[in-house]
Length: 135
Length: 346
Ligand SMILES: Nc1nc2c(ncn2[C@@H]2O[C@H](COP(=O)(O)OP(=O)(O)OP(=O)(O)O)[C@@H](O)[C@H]2O)c(=O)[nH]1
Ligand SMILES: [Mg+2]
Image 1 (cartoon, rainbow over the protein chains, first blue to last red):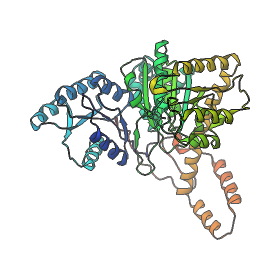
Image 2 (image 1 turned 180 degrees about the vertical axis):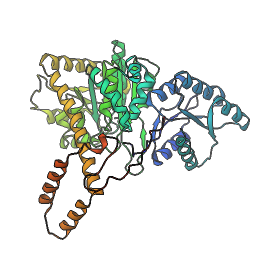
Image 3 (image 1 turned 120 degrees about the horizontal axis):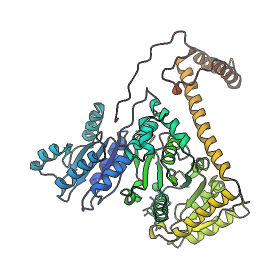
Image 4 (image 1 turned 135 degrees about the vertical axis):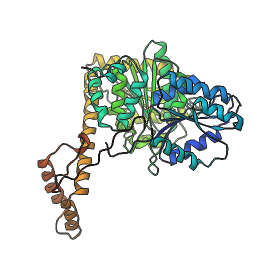
């Protein structure tokens, strides 16, 4: 129906080897409470599995969280794979422990926003809503 | 002539199929023309529904079924429904986590759907999503309902083979007897049989099913599994395939397919009519007058509903959700409807 607003669909995934996903789950619930449909794929995901799931699920956003320190490689790989799969409309954002010095590189690689630990979940939801507007 | 998107989907383009599923889920009218073309190409897949109470192990079982089907060389689609929060309208779609290992396999397409207010454990767009996967040539389509327990019976009209999954320690023993769920299963699965209390559940389920008369030459069996351990799942796969051959042999395959078509069609009719009626009553003055008359006891609900229905049906414009612009027949002028464009990607 034309009059209905489209639901925002988000995939939250944890690439890398760390098995700690409390933070990711908090974000998952917060986005649900903000009215979004959130697919959670769990911990220890390969970039291939994340990109594949994002394509099959037809999401608008992929949110990545990584605490293991391998974020530069993993996040960049996800962005690249999404592009390779023709999912250009998918916006990638990230959270987790990321040194400030890595941020410019990640942004250049196509990660559109990076939320440091302690970011109020409300801010993340707000950013997603704003980003969804001009998609 | 097939449109570009349809051609791409028929060629197996996952991205194109996923985007169409999204547009159908969001009820974009533009997506429907593609669906029409795909509908004609669908109708070959074996649709297996899995229902049962929350946490019974439906997704874990689905994962094993996918594995077995892939070993047998079949391509698989999975449609997994999870509930929508009535408060926020949002949803956590968590079924995929149990099947995620199949994502890299090009022969598997997994799609999560939120129920979006639809009752009975399915979402409105389930039928469309199945149609797209079917047209893509998936041999097996697994349809996991939201774990709704009492009202997960709608799946009976959406699948050729219905699996009802029960597991111990969830109050399943007594609840199951109450719910209509004991009437819809083609196969009953007692999962988590690694747990001791599963014996008790199997026994009471056996008693509850005793005397069930065979349907389409098939008496629903009880299969015991421990899905996480992969125990009993091989047998379950065999029984599912047996059910399929039995349906075909008994000439019941077509009957089931017809019933599935009927369910999807009736859903649409009801949704369209309900939307139409709501819109009429919200915009039109007649309904407001009726509400007043009812409150003042000048008329009764039965008479008012009968008169109103007759009036609505005689006007019978196509329901607004089926056309681009709705013009309420109860109001004198047709107000301009602001046109909103479907933004790509969101
Ligand atoms: N002990 C035991 N646990 C199991 C078995 N099968 C699944 N589980 C566990 O039960 C929990 C729920 O499993 P799911 O497969 O997600 O159940 P579900 O029915 O899909 O759940 P919903 O979709 O949320 O309704 C998980 O923690 C599984 O690991 C089993 O055979 N034995
Ligand atoms: Mg599940």
